[in-house]
Length: 130
Image (cartoon, rainbow, N blue to C red):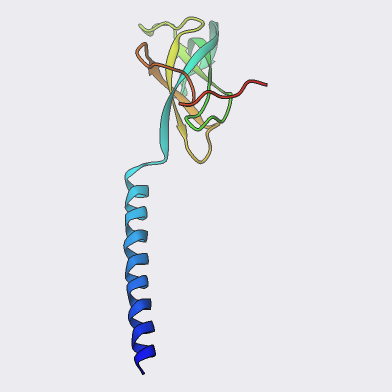
């Protein structure tokens, strides 16, 4: 009888602990929307070209190609964006930009803007070169 009470109490403690841990992990997942930001480098600027903007409108644009690594060392990946010529910000080769990407699918990214103050590009630890 004592054995049943001890095992029952122990299993109840483990169940409560598992529920608390699951609630904490779920809260962390809810707070982060699955998007991370990293720095990328402009590899190509092409234009002016006639193209379609993200809004769907047709205009004279610059096509900007950015290469980036995820913060976990995956990559290199590339993302492209069409920017209208009338835009005040102009990009040139080797400019540093912010890239937002989905953690689950890092190839789905978007260029979020220019940056000049981030200390490094790509993962926090050096990636071995082949």
